[in-house]
Image 1 (cartoon, rainbow, N blue to C red):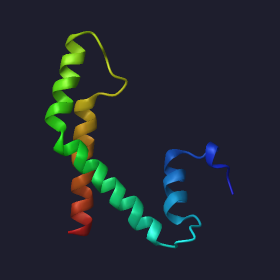
Image 2 (cartoon, rainbow, N blue to C red):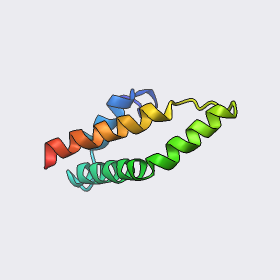
Image 3 (cartoon, helix red, strand yellow):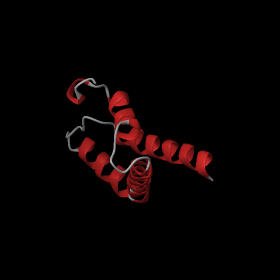
Image 4 (cartoon, one colour):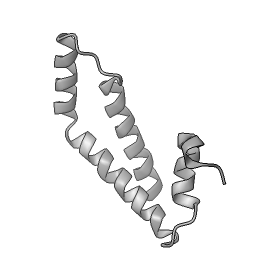
Length: 86
């Protein structure tokens, strides 16, 4: 098995959901539940996140990540999950 420190993000996500867990496939449900809850938090607070991002940009404080794109990615991912499981 490849050392997890050397795995790409995609390889690591696969390792989390398909690699050995003493709880079997339950780990997949845990990962999906955490993903959905995290996405919900970002989407629920998107107005605050984007206002802070805009204020920081105007103050010359630039984030490593474009938060407009981040929030949009969260919404897109949430929609993809809903399309699959609704």
